[in-house]
Length: 139
Image (cartoon, rainbow, N blue to C red):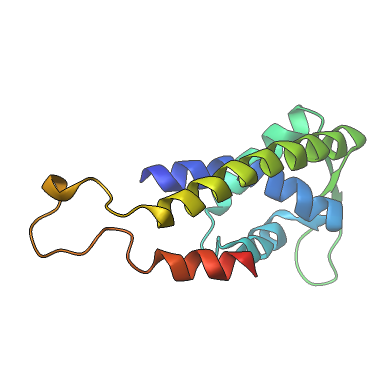
C-alpha cells in the first residue's frame, strides 16, 4: 500500500466519527458516504473492523435494526465519548491543516526543487502547475 494511502486510512476514524455525528448509519451506508471524502472505493472490511474497534473504545454504539427490505442491519451511532474525540480530532486536524497550508505555500515559492543537479537537463522544476492547485485550495 503506497504511503499516502496509509496516511489517508489514518483519517478514517475522524471521518467516520463526523459522518456518525451528522447522522446514524449502517456499515454499508457509511462506506458509501465515505465517497464524499474521496474514498469512492473504501474497503468495506476495513471500515467494519474500524467500527468494531471504535465500539470497543466507546466512541460508537450499535444496535440491530429490522429492515423493511432485507435482513436486519447493525446501525451505528456516535457516543458522548466519540463526540469528545471528534472535537479533539477537529483541533488536531486544524493544526495539521495550518502546517500543510504553510508547506504548500512555501513549496510553490521554490525556485528550484532539488537543485539543478537533481533534475535531468531540460526538465522543468518539479512543482510546475502546483501554483494553480494552491489557488484552488484558497477558494
